[in-house]
Image (cartoon, one colour):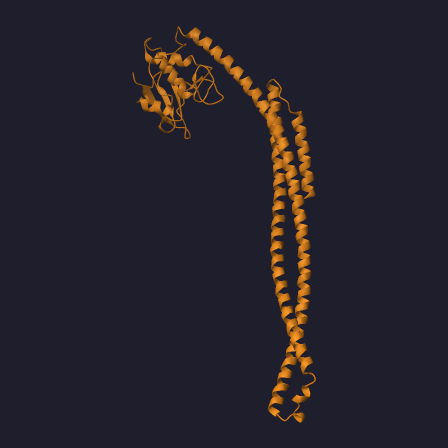
Length: 360
């Protein structure tokens, strides 16, 4: 037990030293250092938890032993009470036999056939005396045995009480040590969480700033290119709904992915397509599964710019817009920006549900 406490204390001190040394820093190398420090802190925290688990298991075992000894004490007390009852009965019998012997000791000669005129009564008296004397001898023997057993059981009871007290004290020390370690661990965890939260806040702020700059740059590039189609892009007629939707989607390049988003500040996959076709005068719901239901199925060989690729059961997991030349535009997931990627036909985990073309 003491060894466990010492090792745990050493681990805690090591964790404390790591916590003090970890401070957020700017730059790529600083972020890498923060990640390494965070990994070390979490490893040390897990080590402390493992040590406390060992200590808790020892405490549970001590409690089980204490309960077992307590139950045995109850059983021993029951045996002692039974023996004490036997001794009480034997003492009563012994007293009765002694009284009888005392009362009849001066009259035993009346049971002698030489001094009585009633042989039958004398014979009965003699027989009763022999039985009484036999009972007295038997009672004395029982009393001796019960007294010996009583002394033995009382010795066992005293030993068990001492053992129970030892187990109880050990359990008390164990749980006290566990509680102290838990309090220390919680303090260290709060410090670790504070450091990691500061680190992630700095990373998120940097990412948000980068996303904002990229979005602004993408908007400027889209504004410059709005008057003419992208190079090598198969341009439909200027009045084409698909052409307007594609151009609108391209204007969101660099906008960060935001779940449920439908604005220049952030979009999700269905929000991007909804806003693109909204610019072309077509209303679509803000949900990929509903858009899948509201569009007309198109075979892969007939796919055209502006068509929507839906993934997952009934197209309710993800979607992207085809822009031609084997490329599509999409808002993929948290942590990414709206971007152009190669045409993707899904996989076993996220299969292509179908291609949809908006009506109108």
